[in-house]
Image (cartoon, rainbow, N blue to C red; front, side):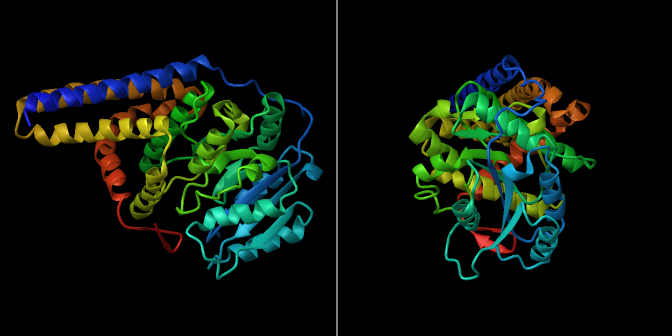
Length: 382
């Protein structure tokens, strides 16, 4: 193929990427954060669901932060589903239950459960026993502030969405890898949030996902999307979008609604997590979602391609330097727009070296996720 054609293809892909990220920056700034919620507005019964497997180091902090909510105790319950943990997770939950028996319930997933998606099965099992009008899912390694449920309930009562996507932060962070993950994750959450605020549901995260129980049952829950180990968030959101329309899915841009999760410090576990996230992309059938995922992948892949070709062609070397600089600038502007909300402005400069890592690891993860299986929590999944 003529190298000039390749050059123009790279320029075209990069131009589309710049347009998408610039749009996200504009949309994020356009929609201001929701003012702090100070009082209850018709409290709604809530069921918080936590699927846990081998989380002995995190589960107590998670449950403590949920139990310390500034929300009427008689209007929320916590259902923890123990997914055959092989550590002391179950014992820690049972001890916590002895002190908070009214609000906390423990369900054990059957040892012989036959499924391709244990987490979806865990959530579905909990929803069958849930008493709440609203289902709030989070992960066992997350913590929340005391106004978390209050902010969710007020937002739901004010807007009436059938599904609500909440913000997730990686933090607190001290290490270099933690700060890099924080920046990358804030960009993902910010991108999803920006387009959701404009009525375009493209991304969400199961660590802070809220939906009506009746709507979940109306679309038959995870039926037809339970063939993948992951996807309890994205695939479910797309199913809600298909049945109810984009306007029924909202994003709560409120700092009280934030859920915090820890960074991953081990490279192997990080790689397996990202591979797990990317693996569900094979089941995306929504044009807008496929387009966004394709542009993000193509922008990184094309820069990686230019970097490799720069060793044999000065044209590609010059193009790489130019496009890499432009991408850094556009991404930095976006991260700066997000930073007042995500509170990570102090280490924004790390986004520049982080870009070099991204243009290599994003294509590698995307391609690797389409083949073979991955290991997660002691299981080999696909």
